[in-house]
Image (tube, rainbow, N blue to C red; front, side, top):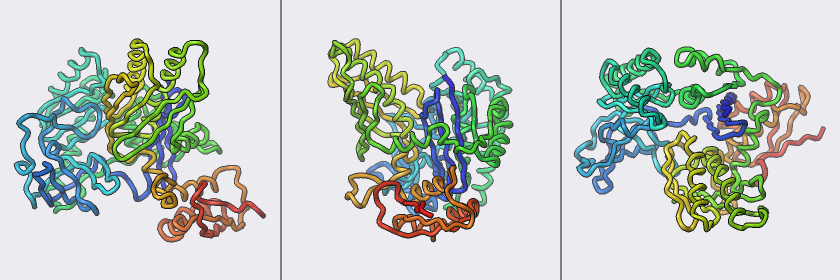
Length: 495
């Protein structure tokens, strides 16, 4: 399988896409002034302790208090950590109570494990986890662990022995990137992470709550740290400054990968060249067409994500059971890809087409489970039911693609979604700057936008249009209109 990483950087945002055999499987966004909080470490103060729900609210300097659940206030359990920056405490019968662990007014160091969503503040943990390329450092823990993705028992035992021999205090987890790495290969990561924790501790000693003690890496560096494993064939970056930062990072963290960095400098935009823009647009639609003529319908609700498989125009040949089985196998591969692409989390229920043959059901489940195994997020899959349903729980730490790029539509009472004002503004910027350029230097470009977009471009972030005007040597004139359908803007292309 050929794996590629595409990094598109512009002043307003950074986007990263992961391709497997030419197909987009992951897309990540980070926008100027709107960076996520996951991975940040704060010195906070306990605001309220609620024994009734075994949780506490912690002030970390944001609009909403952070939520600290009792299991996140307890000690690390390294054996449960698969691949991510946040460790999880195994539930036990003698679990301590939240009011035994924290008190109102207490200062506490916490790390964000889930970004704020809707009306909820961020979720935090008192068990700090600092990820590197090959290791995760757990200050205050004593155990060692190995990623569940390392399946070979001999390799797991070898890595555990290497971790136990590491000097200093704290626990360690070997990530997937540590596979077949020697103790010397892991030494630089150990030194870097231990030094990082020392710097956090020094800031903690002089800071008063609430205070940010450590900010997570920017998206481009985070992507090569967490996504760019040794099997990545190419890392294409369209911004020289971002490429330089990534090269500096990789030359220290993973020198072989630095040689796979490429500057993309063609006229056609990077994401357009590899079909990522089209995939993003399609991922905002509820219906996904399958090559056979069938389709998948994805509907997100507050409680769960419902995914329905339909045969559509796919009628097969002679046998109904074989037709349904073939349609389900095709859908299973695409559903797994859409889950990753859209970053769907929480409880997911997939309604496959009913099949009579138990062997077909088992093969479908195994195919689906194998496809989901490629996912970096933690997933748990239950066996297919007699009604053709498969239930999945998937780790959710950041807003999924739909929630990042769209908002509730006021025109339809919240039953649908439209792109956010910032998404429309950035789409407009891309259209104006993408070749072929339709405007001559000195020309006035007239654009009609909906009111919210006009306010954002004129008052909140005027740098977006200033960059367009400077690059094209034109003047952009905005007119506000009630454009709630379509792309959210209209460009006057007349002379």
